[in-house]
Image (cartoon, rainbow, N blue to C red; front, side, top):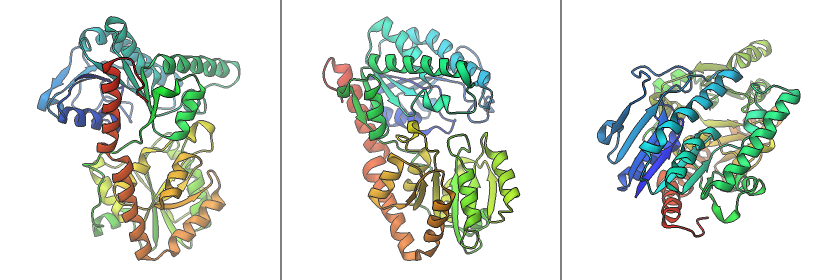
Length: 418
């Protein structure tokens, strides 16, 4: 089958889902045409080794896998707290990908669109106008909530106008997609409530980069990097932004300072305020490592005792299963989750870690203390179960089977793809 894949973010950017899906579909014999932007996430700068120009494509082994062709289009690079910068980033990809789509995606049997941002749908819509091609929309994030709840959105009348505009846009996208894949049951309910045909919607749990995230033995070097000092060590890895509310974890670690150490690996718009909070509290058991190369992360996962997942308590986030959860489970790491909704239910129902309500430092401190009391044998059993759950429910093989099925059914014509 000839498949068009539209995504604003693609490797070498650290966004696993679309890149791994393209690789897997190509290995299965499908001809995959990827339409994406020049890599600039997460720093908001074009990655070294890339120079933006209009015509740039790689195919076959040059694209990293047989049967995959990658066409990159120029974008305005931005990923900071500037609302105008982020809007320009999204709209620039919408414009350049739409210009490239009619020629590059001509003749495909089905289109896959990775969302967010919603503007990525523009290229698919243009391609469909040219050839009536069916579209599978893969929803990773709920708009407008993930936009309006961020610090970038203005308050007052302008903010409400943005929210109404985005809500109307998403309703139209859900109705126009031939099939919709979502990453959790609660997200499926929200999408249906906002206009999607229930028969079009299927839950497909995300996977991670399985070549990178896998079980490995803990090394002395990685433990030294974390500053492991023989105490229970909890690691948070990933973006420190407005939706993680990492301050909750820092306050909880301060309350449980006699039991655990908290290591924060990553960066984001909230990183500096998090550092200030730790300093103000005198939380000497909280350590910041900053951003690390992806190749280092597997060893760091193994060196920590638990991985932490934090989310704010927002209705739009209750259907979110953060990518750091898949990475942790793929590594066979037990988790502590401070969140509501599907992420918490998944961990609780499968027995791969501990759960507490979001944005509650006292409750999280209790979980930290409880985690510290668990025996090494119990932690090992939790990690083994984590790996099993990933392989059975979240692996690339399982997810790609479902996406491939959706693409095949939509390409075959009218039916019930959900």
